[in-house]
Image (cartoon, rainbow, N blue to C red; front, side, top):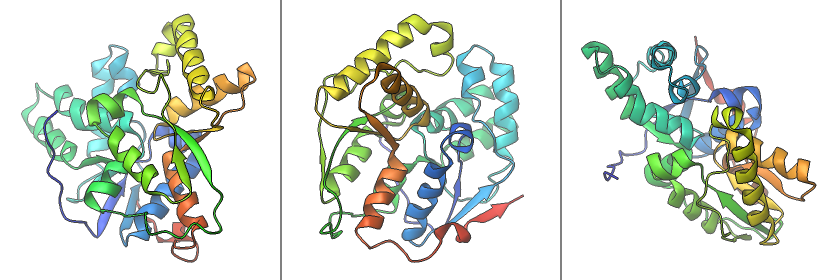
Length: 273
């Protein structure tokens, strides 16, 4: 994977919330905003955003994916980083948007320009904002053991597994436990789980069993699709395994340490039409 060169910390960023965050886990989006604003960044959230186009793209419908991507590209006109609380969606936006418009020079140039500003949340926190949670005071915070799950897109396209690992490992009072099937797909894969339910079900069963075998009761991931799949599968199997988005987990630990900014952080969000 090509080494990425990171800019200085900006004063403004866009947040691309993803459709799964918007529809199923909105708290993860709000907590991502809180983490960014804690570092003095103003977060802008274009209201016209919807989906990155990955479901259509991975289902073999590039024209539909282009229509979705085209609508998103028009939203990020300022030269600000676009932070995405999903490695899977970030991978689509950074690596596949330019490919979609290979036959359209003007749109391809725009897609490349935007794609170069796409960052997965943990990558942005660690490499651009250079956060350091190791100095947090955890005296009143509950100690926790957690296992991680990194989505296929985050691990193999964005290369952001290590960023999540470093952030979690830096948190006082948190112990990360590796499990046997951490590097494997959870079986969700967007429409894959619908087209191949038996295979998907077997994969997530293995994932849940591997996580539970560690004795940890909490699984953390930066991708909502994986979290929904793993969490519901665990509940269906009667396993005691809670799931939490990385943004919410990080913010909860920061807030418990008493270092977070005071007041309702969400009031600072700049909402663009």
